[in-house]
Image 1 (tube, rainbow, N blue to C red):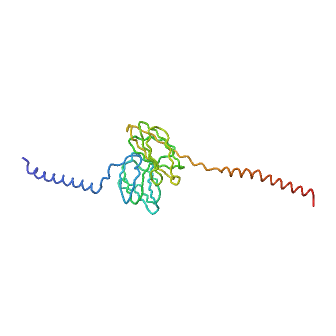
Image 2 (cartoon, helix red, strand yellow):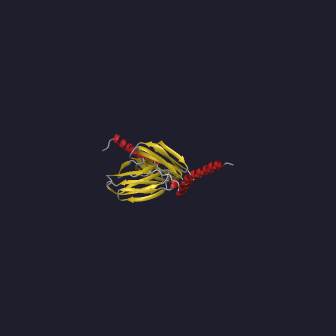
Image 3 (cartoon, rainbow, N blue to C red):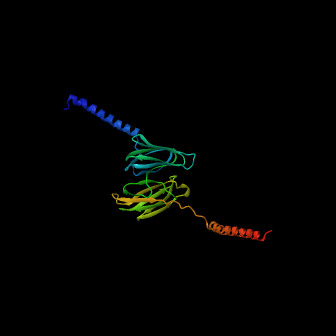
Length: 259
């Protein structure tokens, strides 16, 4: 038979349990869960029309670019990246812009306001070769030297890799499912090639393995003079000395003949 102290403790413990449950529920309402964090070397491409919030998890620290883009100069996108409630990067622009930021691995939140698109992309250096885990989605920021970009894929343990390339407006340029190792050429719009974003993920394969990526963008070769200009220059180089020599010959002939 429960003693008097036990009869007192039971209601107290029940009330405390109820209060704890209410506190947890209130905490959940105050800090709503926005879905599972997106893991990888970047967060992806986001669209905002008003305001939105996304949580993401960076498995690798390093240099990243927080980018925004709008379709016209009258719109704007305000993107704020926070870690544990502390702002790490913020950009508020119209048109296309990207801000460099150094980030540690961990869970982040990105708050977006305005009308347009935003992205968080890992700084993928031109020419470098990098291996990535098959279970990661790679979002990489590229700074091409020309409108042509060549992506070299090494499948590793994967059988199929999906590649997406976006221009500096964060609009899709191409999508390809790669099933063999080798180069993949991409031509960006000539007026939208100041930056690009590469998204890569394994579609089928051993998710415990690794795959490799590299990219390059050749500098544009300045156009040489056209054939007509070259012929004109050659004719002038020949004709001018001949004309000068003829004029000198005529002048000397007049002197010899006298008045």
